Length: 369
Image 1 (cartoon, rainbow, N blue to C red):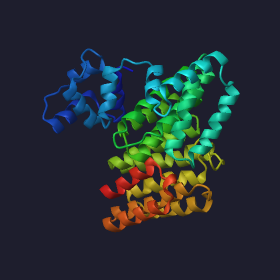
Image 2 (tube, rainbow, N blue to C red):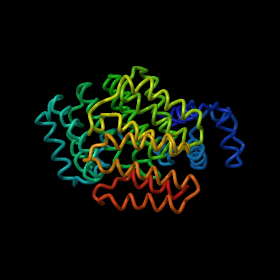
Image 3 (cartoon, rainbow, N blue to C red):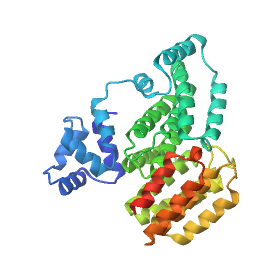
C-alpha cells in the first residue's frame, strides 16, 4: 500500500474530509497546510517529509514507524518475515525454509489442524512461547504459498504472530496485521479477509493502541462482508473500543448494540478455549472493558459477573482481565490510588508466566487515568 492510500484510509476511517485533516494538523502544530496539499499526498503526487509524517502520526493516531515504513518500504513479505523472526538462528532458519520447499511441507488439512492447536494454546500460553512456535511455522508456510488456501493459513498465522507484539508504539504489531490482511486478500476468501482484519481491530482497540489503524481495519472488514461472523463481531467491537477511548460515547454504544444483537446472536461460538471462538463469557470480557471505559459501572459489573459464571478455570488470565477492569473503574470514579492498587494486586495474584503484554497495557491505562 502506498503512503497516499494509507493516509486516505486513516482519514476516511475518522470520517474526516481532506480539509478537516489539514485543519487538525494546523491546529495542533501551527502549520498552514491546505486541502489541496493533502490531496496531493493521497494521490502520491508528493510524499510527506519527516516533519509532516510526525504531524500525521499524531493527528491520525498511527505509529510514526508505520508511516515511515510505508515511505521507505523496500522489502517483500519474505524479507520482512526473515528479518523479524528472532528466535530462530540464521542457519536454522535457512535450513527449515529450504527443507520445507524440498519436502512440500504439511498439507492444507494439516495446517488447519495446526491453526486450531495454536488458537487453543494462545488462550493460556505466554506471548514469548507463542512467538517461538509460530515463527518457525511462518518460515515453513512461506515456502508453500502456491494456492489460495495456504495464503489463508499464512494470514491467520501472521495475525496470531502479530498479537505477540503489542506495545505503546504498536508499529511492529501493526506492520504484521497489515501484512496479514494482504495475505488474506491473496486467499480470495471473504471469511479469512474479514477474520484477519477483525481480529487485528479488536486486538488494537482492546489494547488502546494504534486506534487509527484499528478503525481502518474494522471498516475494511465491515465493507468486505456484512454477513454475521466472528470476524465481523471482532471488527465491530474493536471499533467500539476505539470510539470509547476517544470519548465518542454515542458511537461506542451504537456499536456495542450492533455487535450484541445483530452479529453475536447469529455468529456466537460455544467453544471455550480458542482464539477463533467468541463464546458468551468472552463477549462479556469485551463488554466489561468497554463499559469501564465509558464509565457505565452497572453494565461493567453485570458483564463481569456473567463472564465469571462461564469462564473456564483453566484460563486464569482472563479472570485477571476482569479484575483489571474493576481497577480501571475505581480509578475513573476518582479513586486513582485504590484503582491502581486493585489492578496491581490482580496482576500479582496471577503467576508471572501467565502474564501477557495486553495485561501490562491495561495496567498502564489504569495508572494513566
